[in-house]
Image 1 (cartoon, helix red, strand yellow):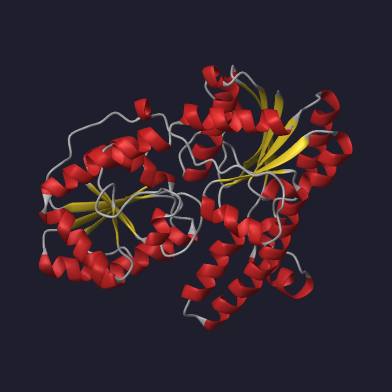
Image 2 (cartoon, helix red, strand yellow):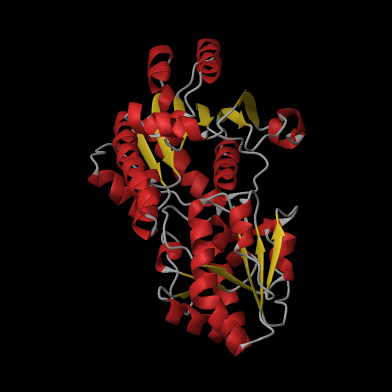
Length: 399
């Protein structure tokens, strides 16, 4: 099959959850024997020269990019609230330059299937329908409106909560229209599929998690010492929210019990206002790091205190693949199909999260047991080759 993948960000380098998910599925489809093309937005937020993409990847996929500006502007937000009914954080991906490039590509090439990486390329559905007879599949990394809906529920500031409610309602209407206009749905978790079914999608769907190749995550000895770590994109609101919750409601109590406890935090694009909240003698903020695997290899216990969001947390899967014990919430464990005290630990209240954290810090045997079972889980349920094979068969029967 000839497949076109549309993405609102560069799939390379695969540094964050979204780019890892996109890159792995694109390469997986190529390795299944499909002729894969990718048209991606090269945004000013995550710029990367397409010429710097490694040759072995360019040999597997036909990559084309369009440089665009997706900055959020305060005046634009205000204008949008009062004079538009569309979600501002979605509208910024509607660009004439990208539409022109897509039109040219569809006139040059004939595709059997077009895969949208998330709903934002959905702005170009009309262009695809006009210039192509290909089936359209939505690869849903999460349910966008749910992230903002949940964020509104956890926000204490009245004005911010009101804005987030408006945003989530607009996103729900828009996202529902995009999903229901697609022919096929490929959600990342059963929870997300159920949500899309509830809002009206009635077509063929296949749940495909984010895949990893366990060989890319070599096992290393679990470091000793009383420390925990977090790694993830710090411009993503659920990550900011979770870390603030952990520091304010859990971590300060832990340091009273264990004065030498260290909390290592790594992630890119952290706003200055957020970095200020990390000022604590027991916190080490590393900012953006060059090598995520090296960071995880150097530290022992990962925490993922996520309160909102949907989809699958890829950094949790990566930590499990590397043999690192993980403590997260029920929300963080969604879609991973892991059992509490088997492949990871799950806690949802500040008290329980603190107790489970202490349990890992003080019980090395438990850490080693969970680390071993977690790696097995990734190998058995999240193998890229197996997942790509299932997706390939689904597309071949539907397109």
